[in-house]
Length: 258
Image 1 (cartoon, rainbow, N blue to C red):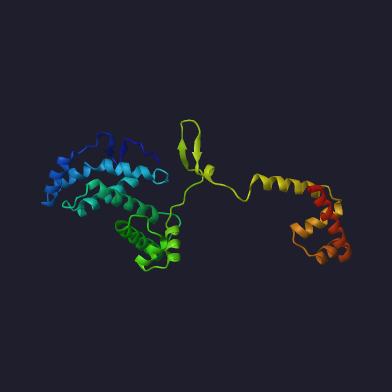
Image 2 (cartoon, rainbow, N blue to C red):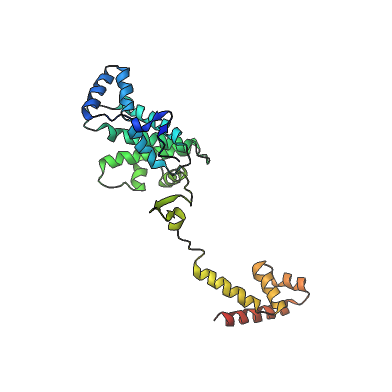
């Protein structure tokens, strides 16, 4: 996403005005009296706030123009609902509103569709968490959120996981100007460790050293999942012979791998 575009949705971001605290207060007093021009000026004076928020979503594939428009919707909602009598800065109130609007947009436009009931469960859990955060001095646990929302903790975990936006393994997370660090560089692979690769190579070499018929029996038994009787029928010998050859092959392989 070209986050450093100068012109977004026809707006030259390099020329956006910056309002002083006194100007903000005066404009908001006029807004409360129904002055639409003051409202327009207040919106323009806070567009830099929208830009700073949508930078947080630069790892998405969404158009910056679309995110900017959505962010502006969040800004307008914040202006329309802000209580000037509360001892809170407008930016403190507006940023979560803008973030919430962008996240809703990203969720609703996600290629992986999440049902309305699951999204509702997630939103209720998030609202319960925000309520608890105001009352507690620590991050509320899933159990506490469950108790506050009246929703089973397993349903909360499922819903919150479902609404998360997928992240590409090739998403850059750090760059020093030369080498870029990607998400995949921070993920461990417990299944395909180097020790396993070495073991698999050694096993392959042990099988190659077996006589042709024993190698064929090991392949049928352990790689194709056939029973000794099925192997016996396929290569036209008795099951007892298959059993004896299999034991000899396994013994030879163990000796090689020691």
